[in-house]
Length: 158
Image (cartoon, rainbow, N blue to C red):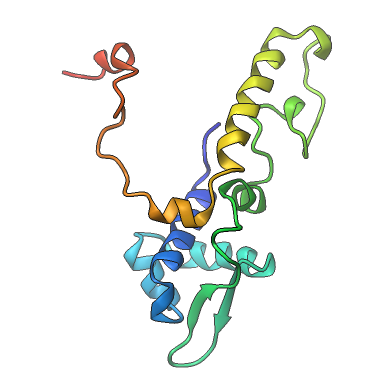
């Protein structure tokens, strides 16, 4: 699974709204600048999130965007589905957006079988983690903070 720019930007903006919620409505320009996001694209993303009831807008000189939903009840998976659709790595394993694949027999397809496991692992995380939990995370400087992938990273070092 590769997260689209649309979902990345939407999640970054929502995290910003969670972290700065006490400041009142946040203007689009401030959200875009603070998160290094293209304003026009961000406006389109926020329109989808507004339609879904996750954000609200306030007009006027002190207007902007605020959260309309409790960040403890909105999962990352919900946001990604709103902005991108399926979370599954292949359409033939998608629970909500299923489409048959091109393999000769889905029932005996080994790739489909492992992708069901991948889908389930992805859903277990994304449908559990909320915007509040995401906003509380500090981030990590290392791409491999637990040291689990030293072999994969060995080829990347000069």
